[in-house]
Figure 1 (cartoon, rainbow over the protein chains, first blue to last red):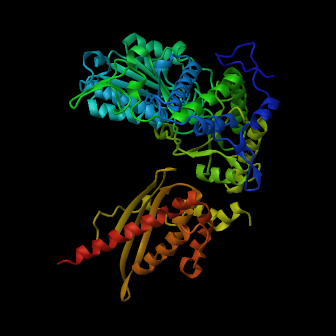
Figure 2: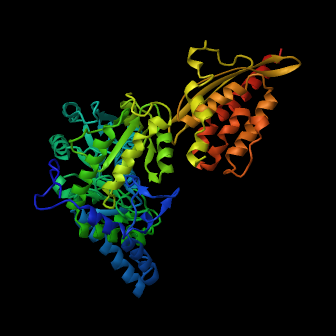
Figure 3: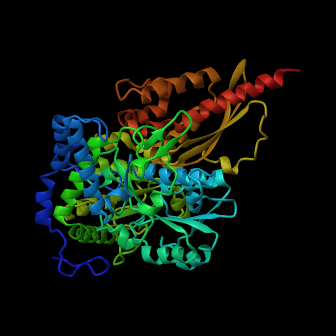
Length: 444
Length: 165
């Protein structure tokens, strides 16, 4: 058992998953048992999308085989069972992130969730939903604050919202090591700041942002806090109430669930004062030819037929995570993250982005190989059966700030063995010699 | 030869470093609309690879031919080598011949490895045939060729305009 000193959520009584447990966990993931180019698959791209345990695949199939029906309409037996499954899934996922059932809205993914918020605020800005929605309305003297490390999904919806309302978008810069410059943040958070949107953990840097510090700054000026939990919900024990954010979003496919399902958390009193974004069936009370009245949250934001089987499967995914223990997953991944950053940083010409060895990091490391483009790095690794992500990872401004156009990212999950991390590190050491930018053993 | 070695042939790795024609930044600027000159910027949004390529067409013997090609870019070994090889091949080619070469190269790249390269037509670019088996990399190999096709079209359009008295 190895304890990691840094994580604030670490409980002294809880140990990280060990290699034997991880080997047992791997048996639950059929996709991992295959060869690529004659080599065992080493899947290090869970930050992009995670794999599904058999229980998730079975939950979706079982739903279709036994209870498939529309929900919240129809009085027949299957409709009732499907509705129960759908709402049970909501309760399960809500509990997983520490919120009430009616505070969790299903969306297609985190991107859809952030757009839902931005468009609802946009509707409030043109006077929809009357005075109660006034607190979400933006005007030209207002500001929306994000950070320089955001995924495009937590940047572009706010750019567009500002374009539509005349508000100004500002961002908290990062330092050369990729950390938020908090002294700049405290200068940038002012009475003009209406929304502070930031990522919990960067999908490129693998750092964990100081949520409490940022929430405190926002509270002092009455700004709403939107947390992008896309990379934290799968990997860290989460309690949005304890984090005291107003809104949060995450995606199911990054946390052992299927694609096409994600969620928005919003504080109940806020959600029920917000104008809807998508409108249509299933989100109304009374409709005339001229106008409509809307249901309270969550239905208020769930127009049309929802991703029902996906919600059921996502509930199976969070049950799998809860049974494994999120603290144990987080501790395990902190160890793998250290193994990654330590191993990769020791290779000549390799620069790991974000926190250095010994500093707090999730199980994710993006890196640059001097003289070799990320696409070529990814191709070399794929030839060895190692799957990584290459490119700008939907974070162009962050890469530009770090002087890069692209990087290579390895990201772990609860099924990643330490042997797989070692295979990656060993393979990366061979890349510069292969491409002829450094002789074996030569100093860069 | 392993799959990786057939993709990254020695010739390709060498071109990715020497980057023939990759000196656009050092060339004097050509005013836009100059007769016989075309310039095209191409970006691969998936990986951020980009290239700016300028090409000049002038009189040669009875007809026309490519007289100059220069580019500036940033990208992977495949995209940079592809631009370098094209820059060595294109000068001296007639517009029709360059277009025919680009068409064959595109067909080859899109063939998923099912088409044989016409080595006489493609010369060194035949070394890029291995890319066709990696659909995710075809855009990398095509980047400079798409830019050349666009620049050629502009160069010829400019000439037609300049001929109008």
